[in-house]
Length: 504
Image (cartoon, rainbow, N blue to C red; front, side, top):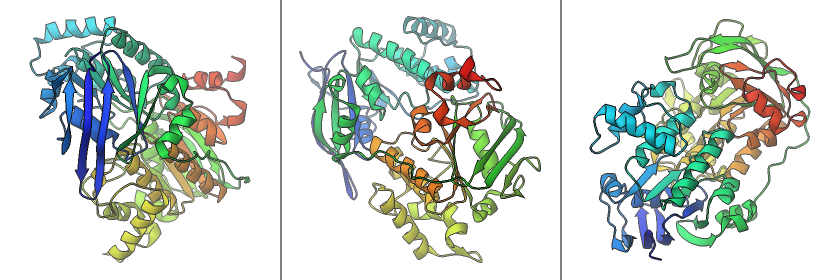
């Protein structure tokens, strides 16, 4: 059978790094093909070349036996290639239909488009109303908008980049049913994910990249997740281990934290109460959009609170600004790494200065110590294995996973008394995720109070001492993680607050 897509010797180099080195890959019609590799392995560059965003330096691509040289995404879409990106590109204030129309070359009249959206959404099990405002949608529903936009253009190859990172287990099941139906109809899918058990359940074949080169292929269902991870990193995979430690006094005390929604599309916090002791890891789980960002903003100082709601070692922090909180030892890392945790066009050295000035003594009486800041940035890069040519590179030049390692490393290395992180391993490969989780466990073992907000339940079960669920801005009472199972956690995520979920 002629491959749907064939890549031969595809190479792309940037200053200081070869992103793809003579990559050869074939995808058959209807095949669900996984593209695996650790952060910085070259996955993003490869799919950008397929989608016409980047021009290869050498090598060839063929689509159904014919030369394929996309000059831009429009040309790729015309050739039958669609892509659903990890970061959604939607306008909150517009409707589903209006957003989909903006992504089409020649959209039909709005009434006809609405009918098409309903038909496609019903056909592929992705229920979605064309009239709803995108800002009111859950993360899973937003992803449906992106998928339906692609499906309306009848793709022969659908590229999906970390498609389940913001989905509930139930939404993952729906997505997989859709992808299997597309596959049965002959649509090929190039699937990028760090969730290897999902790869095993869904994909027919896998190609593994390391350092920009193809280092192996496998049939996922016949290969363990650990074996695939070790193929990706080229070494034995370490498993995070918590050191024996005792919890100490209450460090962070949150009492009746309530705050209005920051925008029409935000979530109000409602009477959130918890304590975190020295040496304690509190895991907070929840489906995207239930108040995670708002909670981090309140704890970091980005959103002022009513006096008495947030205290640190007995000191009221409710109206203390973020920089002063950092000086005291209350640090945070938000979910959105590019634009919130890091300034895209600033270098890694400059980004190290942005949050490290107070704790690392990088600024004295308004004078910035750039040599010391550069040394701090180099230390982050070295200790957290950030793949970059150096600290002078802009944050936007890093892959998502490598920027995540830099952001987490920047906060951990400042020796916080309290660290609040939202989605610490989002889009990070298995080895890097293990390293980040280990750094959080080590921080707690050293006496810090750690709050981990995450949608990855396996992550929370692995590193948390206690677990609480955030649902519609309300937090359940924290419970020892060792007493919970997946069914109980599912009830808590669904809003089973204030009841003994073990007896439900």
